[in-house]
Every structure is written in C-alpha cells, then in structure tokens.
Image (tube, rainbow over all chains, first blue to last red; front, side, top):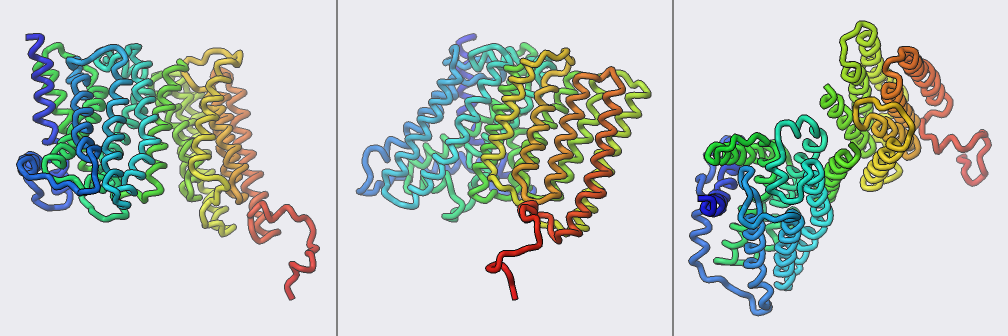
Length: 305
Length: 221
C-alpha cells in the first residue's frame, strides 16, 4: 500500500491539473457575468490537439521539436519530487528543492531555445521578455524556498512541509507570510496570469509566454499546454502546502483538504485576474522585484532570529 | 502577543519599501500616517498590559501621527500648490535595493549593538531601517514638502527605537511626543509656509542661489 500511495498521488496530479485552469476560467466568467467555457475545456483541447499532425517550418532544427518534450518532461520530473498534501513524492531526497528549481529553469531554457530556433523576430521578442522576467523570478523562488528551509530546519521539500505545523506558523508568522506572498506573485508570473501576462490576448505588445509557442502545433502544442497546467499545479501545490500546516494523519482527509485548497487557490487566481488589469510591461519587473524583496525579507527574518 | 507585534514590524518595513518607491505625494502622506499609527500600536503589544498610562500615550501618539500630521501635510500641500508627483531623483530598482540593503545592514548592526533584549524580534533593525528610509526620502526628493515627509518617517523610526529600549520608562516616551509636537509646530507651521511665501516654489534646488542678483544671460527683459 505504501508503494501505491505515491503513485496514486502522482496520477491524481496528472489527471487533475488541467482542471485548475477550468476553474480559473469559470471564476473569470462568473465575474464577467458570462457562462464561460466548460470546466473540462482543456481536456477537450488536449484531446483534439493530440491527434493532429504537427507542422514544422523548414528553417527549424531538432531543437524546435525537442523544446516541448523537454519542457514537459522537466515539469513531470519536478512534480514527482513535489509533496502531495504533506506526503513525499516518490522522488523526494535531501536538497530536492534546488533540483526542482533547476528543472524548471531547464524547461524554460528549452522553451526559449525552441522559440529562438524558429528564426522569427516576434518569437525572439517573447523569448527575450521571458528571460528578462526570469532574471527576477528565479532568485525570488530560490530565496523563498531557502527561507522555508530555514524556517523548518529541513532540506527536503517533503520534510519541510511535514515539519510545518500550526505552531511554526505561530512562531515564524512574518517569514511564512512573506514567502507565501512571494510564491503567489511567482505563481502569477510563472504561469502567465494576469498582472504579468494575459493568457487570452494575442496582441503582440502584451504577449510573453504565448508568443513563444505560436509556431508549435498538434501534439507539440498539447505538450506545452499540458506542461503549463502542470506548472500551475506545481506552484499552487507549494502555496497550498504552506498554508495548510495541519496534518490529521489520515491520507484521505489530508488529500481532500489539499485538493479543496487547490480549488480555493484557483478561485483566488480567477478573482485576482478579474479585479486587476494587466501591468504595463515595464512595471512587471517591479512586481517581480517585489516578490524578490518579500523572499529576501523572509530569509533575513528567519536567519536573524 | 509577540507574533502580532512582529507582524506589525514586518508591516512597518514593507511600508518603508513602498514609501521609498511610491510616486504620488498624497499616497506618501497617507503611508507615513499609517506607519505612524502602526508604530503607535506597538507599545500596546510590547507591554502586553492594558495599563492606563500606556493606553493614554498610545492614543495620543496615534491621534498625532494618524490625524494631525496628515491633516497638516495635506493643508501644506494645498497651500504650496505642490500637487504634482514627488519627483524622485533615483529610480525604482535603486530605491528598493537601497532600502533592502539598509534593512540588511540594520539587522547586522542591531545584532551587534549592546542593547537590552526587547522580546520582539527585529524591532531595532526595523527602527534603524525606518530612519534610513527617512534619510533616503530627504536626500532623493526634490521638493521641500517631501523632505518634511522624510523627517516624519525618521521620527517614526526614532519613536520605534525609543520603544524598543525604554518601554518601561515614560520619560523617553514623553520626549518622543515632544519631538512630534516640535515637528508639528516648527516644520509645518513655519518652514513650509515661509518657504512658499519667499521663494514662490518649494524645490530646494532653486534655493542654492542666495541673492537676488542674476547673471546677465539669465535676465529677461
């Protein structure tokens, strides 16, 4: 049974993560007074894309085909090490949070390379913006996880979230609050949600993530869309695990609370998207710098006490 | 109780950062007022008791910093016509990094200073960082009114510092209140009013020239 549980958790993540985007879209539609697309829209999209024939430009090389696959494998690998409802994934080891950060960076690097490989100046612009934002987002992410590691005194993500208890929220409330805020900003930025990037527009002036994947088609696009859903789950799970410190010991109840928290989080993202406008492009680094400042403050608070 | 006090400290530090990067004068005035109110709430947390004397001081400080100062500042803004933005001389990244560096340096300094332990973590670094933010506001803003604002922020920092050390000694608190009153009466009542009357504008760069004499090429016939 103890071998099956991590696999079941992993399967649940793989199956449920596209649902998050469905919830976000429904919440946005509710705020706008529309019916909105079906909750399972992304599943339909993925199914439709998976049997289409991809089209490759003659100017592209193997890098263009490798980009989506490596991006998806990186995030799949990262999710295997991510704890689910306070329980370790089957790849968890000491120091795995650094491994996760590098996996995400690898996925980003290959997405950017694939975008540059098309030779289109438009995609090059998107790649440049992506990397420019990553300059601020990656240190913020690293320092937030370092602060969490410092607050709990553990080196593995699973141990960190296991050691996180209501008492630790009481003892280290400022640092945990700051790093949760930093993680939420990062979630919005990394998943091209509204204050940073609008997932619905295809205007060249506003696009960041969307523009890099314009030339991908068929299964490749499905990999990218699915990878994006998994990445949203990845960041959401980090936040849900840090704000849900109580572990009842029962696998079923913990899992249910965790999934409920993920749904609440998706609703919160939808609400943020509905009540906020997109930031001007030159203000986005300021927002990410804010996340970096939150992380640094959290780390300072933890090391100084 | 200490957790709540620490959250207030974090709030004050975040307010420092926002103050350092905010571009609008009215927002800055409000932020400084909120910071003053948060600082005024601190002694209630740190002492832990609801003693009459501490309550009275806290109420007085909150009234002064949360109501009187912002009112005077807004009045001064109306009178001097300084309605435009605060014109920082340095940009967002430099301001926020300076503020953060100040907090890091203050944490280091706070751990080295031979002070009695106050029970609330980071109260000394937060006060030093607030004082530094005030200096930053004074040195990097062009207008006299924003420099007064910087002085108010410094005053907030000094108040928190005094709180950290002498929370049991009412004399220090009274001195802090006297300092507040001094700001209110002297800086607001006299300085800004005179400056706006004498010079027609409150940009301190323009005050570098002391005489009425103009070089011929500047003269306008």
